[in-house]
Image (cartoon, rainbow, N blue to C red; front, side, top):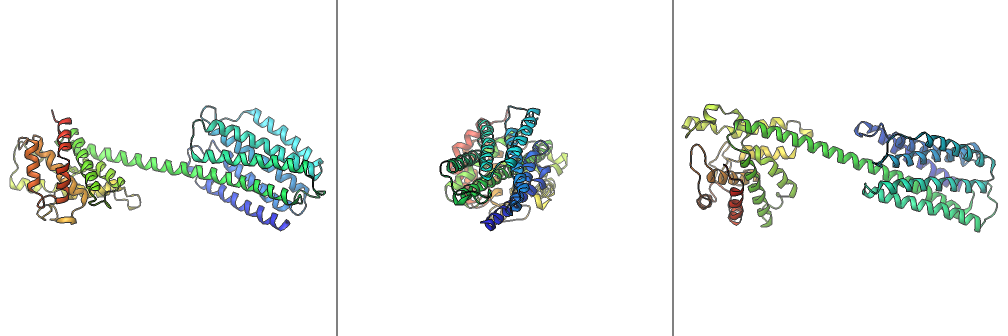
Length: 436
């Protein structure tokens, strides 16, 4: 049994030290790390307690006392950690906590050092149960505002620990075994309860570590989305500075793109490409389709009338220019943004035609990115039913006929089929966000 004790507690020491080092290595990533020093400190105390248990198995009373004292220090730190998760109290630790812990420590050390092996089990179980009840009390307050599954699991673990410790006292009192020479020789029942209780404590530490990893992941995801959103807003603003289109044009085309993509997916067409995340990226990327117009001279971009053939050739370069601008914004391959990858496809391909007669590359059929094929139809419909400096606006019916006429020529036949099924929605959006 001594060998089992040694293997178990040394393994526990390695696990707890690994958790502590893993947390400390990420300290710059956690906003609250400076305020929750008692979490890595708690892991450190618990790891040292396990190592002291490992040494104490050879019969050292000093290390046996030390390991139980370190165990209480670790449980104090965990209780303070749970306290820090409550939003309705200060992060500062009350001096009364330190005074109370000092008194408890002195009391514990005196009783433990002067007691016999059986009384030491009573003392240890009583003190650990007291700390477990404190942990449970703090988590009771936490779960009122934090419904994270880890909190519920921790409550369950602590309840199990309390039951185990109470069971240990009950068994020892009502079913006394032969004289216990040392705390590690308390019989199979006592040994099992002690090991399971220790495992519950290690499991609690692992759940807490997972809680922080989950928080770190959410923080990274939130930061990534904030960066992505800020970049998109900046690029949209840049596009709007030079473009004659209005904000309503952006709202309309985004709605058209989303509905076309969802209709295609419901039809079972391109379903593998039209995942929820890809549709979301497509919608967010849609406003950047004409960002290349930032490179078109004002005398062409803002000309009040039809363009000459030479001017039209210059205007057509906006697709390739937009692609280059967005590729530059997405140049860091390690942090490539999916929405910008979608925007690159749209900007560079929304003037390509199904029959290969479009620009800038003359792509045809499914060589043209799907997002660009969807954007092409949405952009064409919006251009037709709204007035431009070079044309009068068309009726909804005339625009639908024009798009249907170019099925398989300019537009992907499947996208046109989806459009025909959504004609009424397009008309509704065009009227809802009509230009003044």
